Length: 123
Image (cartoon, rainbow, N blue to C red; front, side, top):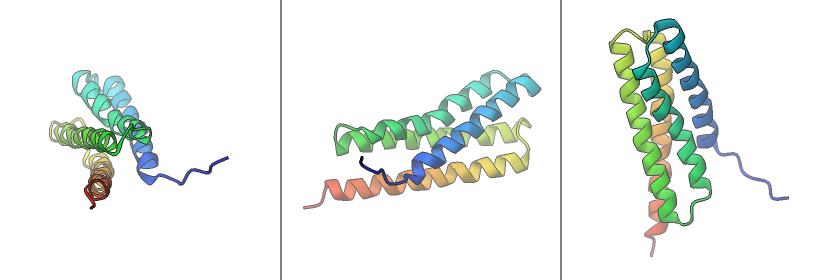
């Protein structure tokens, strides 16, 4: 059996998705907020889903595409986090923790995309 190497990006994006699901549940049940909760749920969980899709990409170009779309979802999630904080739906402490994790995912995605692009365009 082939042993897979750990994938920190995959693991961190899954952990982040769980926190986003819980945030969305809290927004609906405690704050009765339905629109923004759906937006952040969609974008925040799409990050990891796209990373998983990238695992079985048909080519390096397909991999780059999946990770680039994941990066766009992470950037959108950062937007929703800021909006939730600035409208009083998310306290500063929760915002700071979630935004740090989101920014870390963004950095890791950018780094992964750059690495694959370098290998793709290497002579």
